[in-house]
Amino acid sequence: MDISLTNSRTRKKEPFRPIDPENVRIYVCGPTVYDRAHLGNARPAIVFDVLFRLMREVYGADHVTYVRNFTDVDDKINARAKESGRSIGEITAETTQWYLDDMAEVGVMEPTHMPRATQFIGQMVAMISELIEKGHAYEAEGHVLFAVESYTAYGALSGRSVDDMIAGARVEVAPYKRNPMDFVLWKPSEPDLPGWDSPWGRGRPGWHIECSAMAEELLWKTPLDEGRLSEAALAHPHLFDIHGGGNDLTFPHHENEIAQSCCANGVEHMAQTWLHNEMLQVEGKKMSKSLGNFFTVRDLLDGHDGLPGVPGEVIRFVMLSTHYRKPMDWTAEKAREAEATLRKWRAMVEGVEAGPMPEGVLKAIADDLNTAGAIAELHKLAGAGDAAALKAGAGLLGLLTPELGDWAAVPVDLTALADRLAGARSAAMESKDFSEVDRLKTALLAAGVEVRMSKAGVELLPGAGFDAAKLEGLR
Ligand SMILES: Nc1ncnc2c1ncn2[C@@H]1O[C@H](COP(=O)(O)OP(=O)(O)OP(=O)(O)O)[C@@H](O)[C@H]1O
Ligand SMILES: [Zn+2]
Image (spheres, rainbow, N blue to C red):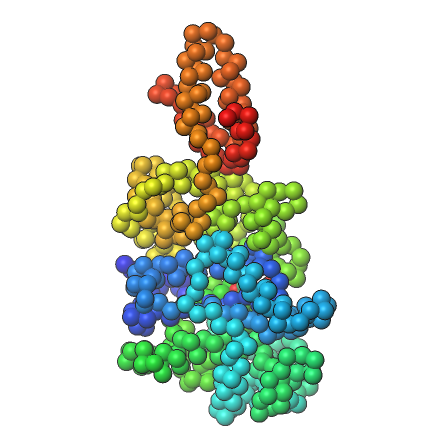
């Protein structure tokens, strides 16, 4: 199966050729753990989960290494601890678990490795030392800074020159910086803040070096030590295959990751392919904590502000209905449609064994993760009544899986109700009194059941907003 991906580094859709098909290596920037994930944060988690599933399908489940980190040392975390009076460790542990629980509920598989930055400080210090030795970084007033002028390719990913950046960005001007674009690799830590001993005194890492160090350790050094890097991989000018994240991270975060990783390792590129998801928006603006225009995944799952909860599978379906490179909005209407579709599909595949992977679905996902196209294929399969193919194809999107299943189980016997309605209709044909038929229909519709009456019989399908409790009176 040919996979093609839109590589933000080359700005082209390209055929994807793994460096080593025996071990496809992927890194995605994970969350900074100081607060509940908002719905926007779930987008990269879900999108790259589909990428992970695709790679496992094509190259084999044991031939993909997927790393998604937790940033558990960061100024935002320190600030949260200070204002809440709680310890940093308590906050990061709690938030990390929340994230894992929330993502599991929207069907995100656990990556192969989920490194926490604080466990890789040694690797960060080593990498910074290497950058200093090679003339790409310098120490000034207890800080270590990356010298952007030492790396001619700086800015290539986002397509800007250092001069443009200085003109366009609000950069932190500090007297100890040689160039205003130079960024922090290490900074001194106050006694009441987390800090580690280093050649530059007690301090803590900058955010960008965290990802470079974790990616290098888990996708390059460890496999190298364990003899798991092929000749081809060793000779390759890239450290690993795919680096992903939201497009809000392209500059400066990813630009800085590239500078650090390429200069420390003397390679041409950090990752062969860079993938960036577009933003989940609210009225045209990025959903973000700083703008305050967000709702959390947990609120959505559990219900909030008087709104009922939305099943995780519905959230996932809505998310995958839009291509990852397009901005998208969350709307209640999309959720209603997704819920109705999933209920129908769940009823169809109940007790059915998944068949072979349907070509159309796999092709769509392999075509730059065209998840919307894959969903269109699933609609075709459902329309044709091919439940086995529907189940297999949906599985590649992480839909109709057993883990996500409970919500759609229908706790009342709709078949019995359908029989009752059919009986009432026959009786009404004779008596010309349709009041019982109307009463049943009204109650069913009010409970979110779709009623289909034809000559052939009566069919009842749980629709969007189906609420079994409302059928209480009919039992
Ligand atoms: N609105 C959004 N839509 C899609 N992805 C997003 C959105 N906001 C953040 N992300 C992505 O979520 C992941 C986790 O990022 P992180 O925890 O740093 O969130 P954040 O950027 O601090 O959130 P915020 O911007 O709300 O402060 C990153 O890959 C980031 O690109
Ligand atoms: Zn990162």
